[in-house]
Length: 475
Ligand code: GLU
Image 1: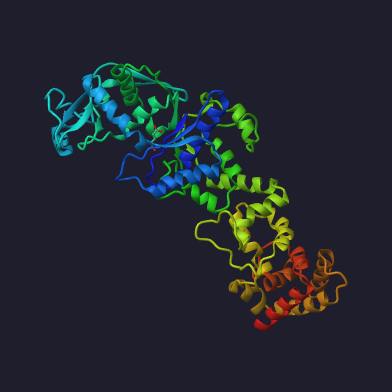
Image 2 (image 1 turned 135 degrees about the vertical axis):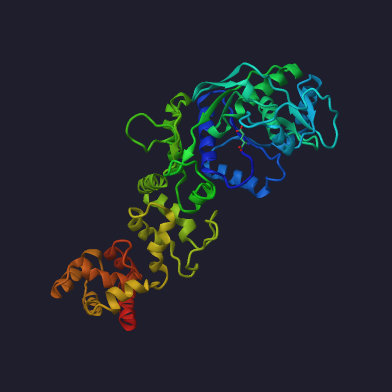
């Protein structure tokens, strides 16, 4: 098995699913090997940073592999393969420009190359590319473990280019040479590659004959397309397809892997949260659907929330560190730093606060805005402040009453704070919710957040009273 990404952009969630399915299959087979091969043979479209992004994504996913290998390292083998095919008469030189091919093509003609140079006997020159001679008649059946046999009419497969004018092998050839060299038995990849499969089988067989090295042809499995809400193919521009984005937003890798496994496949039973060991036990390519799979960010987010709630409090606090700990952390979301410095941060305090937010977030990047007021003065949401304090006469009255009541409490604890707030609200004809709003806004800066009385208790009496007074002063 292999993952063979081209480093042409962000690591796509579809590539992540392909990686996962290959990795699972390799784990199921005692002799299974999963390799990572970066197909970096297109200098115009490849960038080293995208190569590094592939490694980083695979490391984050925790999918172990043999390698990484780089296609460019195998250039001598690609050249040798071209030579063997040429010597066997499978290739011919062609000097047609795309415009010439286009001009010859009649209305309604099959797309692709018309074979113009097939028998012209051109020699190698600076203007000739190499084409592979494909059969004109009959059908080729691609064995596909997801789709069954997929029949292709050979008349629809044109003589495709395998080497540029410079003589350099193209991806179409390099991909097959590498798969043969790597002894790939299962080519598992996205559906967009289905049309390449017959070409690759033809090349593979031709290489077997031309080199005398008979490598069994692989079987294929083309995984269903990922689509968005409009049932359109996920687009790099419109849709959030970069895996990195999910890592930065605080999706847990276990949730992401679980969700990826559901894209085109489903476990037995109704439960969608399934441990990876169990997925590895149950997964079969034969059960993968043909129809497009909806990449549903909302569903992924809900699943992530479930995974977050299942963490132990310690594991949750640890998972939050890149977002809350201003000190040295192994990794931090791109472009992010906590809004508080080391002098304000208190790890022990966060450990007490974390259980209050664990139930309330679906992504870890929601955590900073829920806990910031523990580490810095409240960053007031001015619209909220206006609404419940500045422009509501009950606001300052509640705050004053709270200052008096909280100052006199024997124990500054959640139950006592709750009772005192209920009482001061009742005295003014306010529900608990109404009475809480100005207090929450004064102390946390916002109208939403972790449970108020637990938060006040953790913050402590002195700090709570100081913030109530400060809010009264600015009202
Ligand atoms: N390098 C190809 C791509 O990234 C994948 C080829 C394959 O899996 O066969 O689209």
